[in-house]
Length: 182
View (cartoon, rainbow, N blue to C red):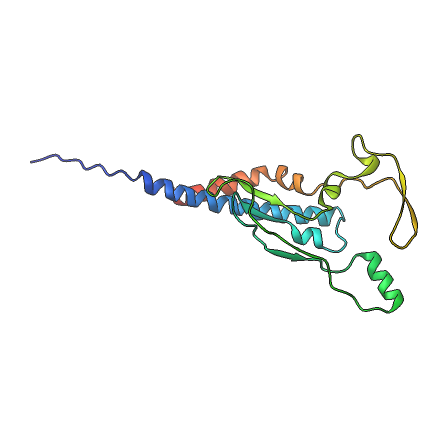
């Protein structure tokens, strides 16, 4: 009678499955952070046209964004008012697109959440006297020749809280995905 033991090395298969589970977890975390950031914008009443909200997306390192294009839901408030007053029809709404890939290399264990809308940092961090080291109130002339006075805009953070306030949820998502296949 022979006592043979056969050992099979499944390391490569286990590592492949672990990578797949981690990618699913990162995608789920990105989706959750996107949802939370959009909700934060709504709660802070920082939505006028919807362009910023609709542009928020996520991407794995070295890969394309989850969405390719985005569009405002409506024209800016001031333009809607002007067009109604003149009896003009609405014109095309603002839109944008994502070109290229997120920072990092494909396979890197990272997900990026954000937007490429030009004014997004001003909403997140504020402007003028409302930011540390910011400027004093100022006057400016708009395209119509009208003068305005402003102190700036208070910050209405939406991205940072979407991540920091959901850290436990992200941990649970990752644990859940890793337990499924390992």
